[in-house]
Amino acid sequence: MTLITSRDKTLAVTLQTRTAASPEHAFEVNVPIDLSLVFKGWGPFPAVQGVKNQTGAWDHVGASRNPVLSDGTTANETLTEYTVDHSFAYEVTGFTNILGKLVEGVRGEWTFTPDGEGTVIRWTYEFKPRRGCYLLVRLGLAPLWRHYMQAGIEAAAKACE
Image (cartoon, rainbow, N blue to C red; front, top):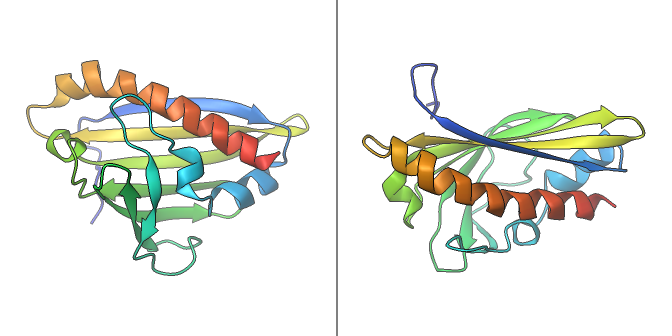
């Protein structure tokens, strides 16, 4: 079942950065990246310490895993799109921390686009707020999340070089 449909009112945060690496290399490095290298923790958001219950390689639609956060909470992550050397997308649901009170889940998408001799890496995190939480997500969570994502996307680009 798809988390987000065209009828849902969502909030997206999109960031991008550049790397000298080719799109193919950036994709190869970032799809299976150790999440603890990207999600270091910032402000109210915990770091990712690792994953458990991964269902094989993170290279096909339907693969799933449970990110384990530094505050002891978890979530369910499922790969929903996978286009070799270009993009991948995933859904995260079942947050056992405060995010679970605010959102039904999120859809994340990474794209790797040629940019001269390098690559533009673009990351979108689309929140599906729970009923009655839209303004709280828009005014509180999303702006703070942007800072958390900035450190993450920069770490992802650095891992390519």
